[in-house]
Image (cartoon, rainbow, N blue to C red; front, side, top):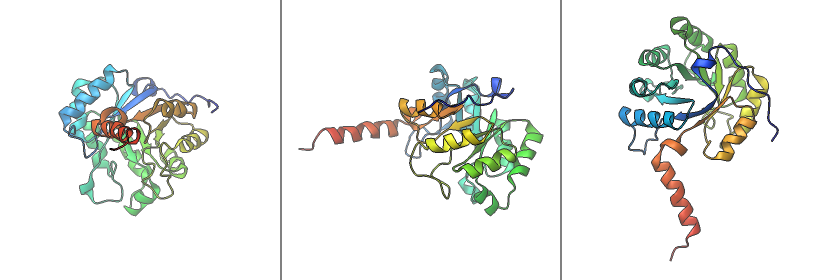
Length: 240
């Protein structure tokens, strides 16, 4: 794969988000490591391992991580009790809570369909958040069209974070084609996320033009990691 141009560097990126590996400290629902203290321990381990940043879900987890790491924190707020089409940082209040907790960057679902269904205007949401806090905004998208709209609405960076969740999105992970499309079409940093679990995945993402790559379960979820090796065992060792 041909290496693409380097992503445009914006002034705030020097301190807010260096290039490199972002560790998603969001254990799955099956993991026993879901409390704020456990998430903070994962963030501390990520920093020791050389991560550029961490991605953390919820104000309490953000607070816990802020106490133990100096890494930039990308905060999201998944709130199923909000009863909205948008699950990731659904409202301005959710975003403000993340900033109050210590998030350096706020990530939110930028699905046009979902936001429209909830009666929201993405540009207004991003504008209000920036006006009140000044923090950069990461738009989580699953398709190119949402990325284009998100940048027009004021997003500072775009991530392929919701791949597989939205209408028209691929179910093949990782979605390197989406990273290529976003990089070719936008002049903001593109964050490759969802399904990046091997060295080859990461290398391919950077070659496709990604500014940074998010790795989650392959680093922070022992249930997922164990299941992968267990599956390998079952495939290699015949049952007797």
